[in-house]
Structures are given as structure tokens and as C-alpha cells.
Image 1: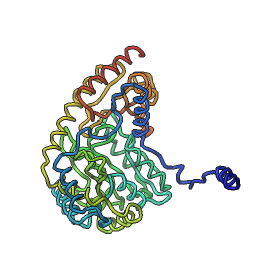
Image 2: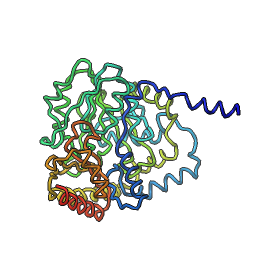
Image 3: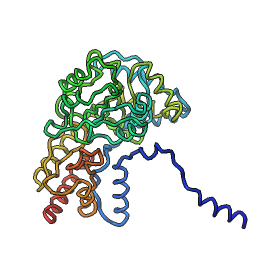
Image 4: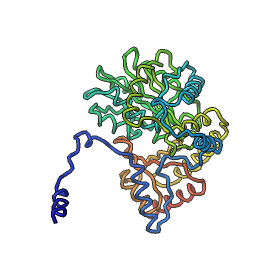
Length: 402
């Protein structure tokens, strides 16, 4: 009986969380995915256009390299910054693609792209500092800025500028307390791409100030119109740029959990220390597969890019025929971001109705920040057949309800 009484008493202790936990956000895509799967368990047929994940399998040559690495014993700890062989391969690839000289000690390999966002903001932003970030934008930017106690300063992405932003507006947001500016191109959720002149204009707005730029280029190989251009390539900005890239989107390796940051060596040392304190290292066998991904056959990347482009074309054209929807043509990534203001519905309510009543899982624009109101995000990482079915369901719903 005494033991039972102790158990009863234990349940009375409330959980006392650190105050900072109240400032930590989430990524709504996973919440909607869980809700959609719950509906599927009830027998409903859902078309999944909510999650930002290629629907392709990892290319066979990369899988074989990973399997081979497991069999060869790459199952032990590696250096916190990543295996030297992979860091060297990344340094060569980034140097070639961005037109700058990169040394191996400027590369830090991490389990996925998010740790670079997490670690860079932890390392650079103190309470009261300001961080400028795109809004609508990847929700983890704002979440992490607020978590560390810094001030999140949104720069609005404007549809009339093809989801770019006003350079004068950016210049007006930069203050003496600005420590970091986050850029993302190609952009999640809008599919917008910053052109070379846009990047140069941003560099001019920053000028000679000692402000770092976190350039999230995770979709850099998935561009449909134009070419990718990095802030790291702007003369005088290499030492002020932290490049974020990885394997998840380019090589359909989301579950492998592998990304990297490229940055000046003194910052890389501190980011590596954060890796040591959190994850120890990235899994060794996945890194061996990563070397094959970078140095092996790249044809799968182009196949995937072309397929996403074909799907984009079909889906955007279809949305533009639906009452209340208007959609610009995204230039990169695998998302479309239609304006739904003419439906008269708020984004969250419309996204919920799409899931519950139409059987199409998508995300509210507000999942990406306050300036996402009036939009929905659909991922075209699904088959053309399913995308066509989704368009039929959306059109049927609007015909009945608008």
C-alpha cells in the first residue's frame, strides 16, 4: 500500500518547464500529416500535398554506397564536424558551384539541415539582438529566433514581386542591433527565387556592416527558371555568409538526416562544438553515402527536377481555373502558393476544409508566418495522377461551397 500511495503522490507534481519552451514553435506540416493519417485510419482517402518531401526513392547508387558502408564497418563515431572525406567532397562541390574557394575546415556536417539553423542562431544571436527573416518563411527560423530570446524581425515577401522583397524595406529594417539576416532561395513556401541582381541589391543594403547572412540554399538544385546565385558568391561576402545545404531535397534523402553548413573557419569551430554537445556526430555510414551522392551519377537529380517542373505546370494551370484561386508560377523548389483571398475564407479554415471535406492535405499560409494569410501551400511532390485528382476535389468543393 505504501508503494501505491507514493505513486498517487507522484502524479500530483506539475511539470515545470523552462520559460524559453513557451517561445518554441513547431512545423505544422508534421501536425497536418498526423491528422491526415488519422483520417486515413478511419477509412477516408487523402491526397497528401502537405509534406515537403520528394516522393522519389533515394537513387540506387547512393543506397548501395550506404549499405556497403554498413557492411564495411562504418558504424562507429566520427569527428563532430563530419568525416574528412565528405567535408572535402562538399568543399569541392560548393567551391565549384558557387565560384569561390572553400577549404575543408569551413564545412560542418550535421544530421539534417535544421541543426545549422538551430546552431547558427544559438551561436550568433543574444537576447535583445535582432534577426531579419523572410515571412512567409520556413517556420523554424522564427521559432529559433524567439527561443534564444532575440527579436524576430520579419521582412515581408510580396506576391507582386514574385515573392521577393522590397530592398528599401529591408534597408529600413537593418539597425545597429541586427546580427543576422536569413535568406532562402529557392524559397519555402512560395517557390520564389532570388535573382542575381536581387542578391547583389541585398548585399548593397548590408554594405560594410558586420552582419552575418544565413543563406538557406537547400533547394538550390531544384530551379525551373533561371540559375541559382548565392550570397556567398558576392565579392566581400564570403566571410559574412553561412551557406546551408544538404542531401534531403536534392537526392531524396530526407530520412538519412544529413545536411551541412559552409562558413568561415572560426565560426565552424563553434558550430562543431554545438554538434559535440548535442549529437556528437552525424551517422558515419550516411556520410559515406553522401560522398557517393556528390561524386556519383547526377542524372537522377535532373530527372527529379524535370518531373517536379511538369507537375508544377499542371497544378498551377489547374489552380488558376478554380474559382477564388490565383497562383503565380513558382521558379523553384516543389511548392505552389496560391492566393485564396477571393474565396472569402481565412487560410487556416480553408486548409482545414480541404482536408476534412475535400480529402486534400495542404498547409495554411499562416503556418509560415502572419504574412502567409490569404494563401495555401501545396507540395507537388506527388504523382501527376494524384495532383489531377486533388484539383478535381478542390474544384468540386469550391463549386459546392463558394
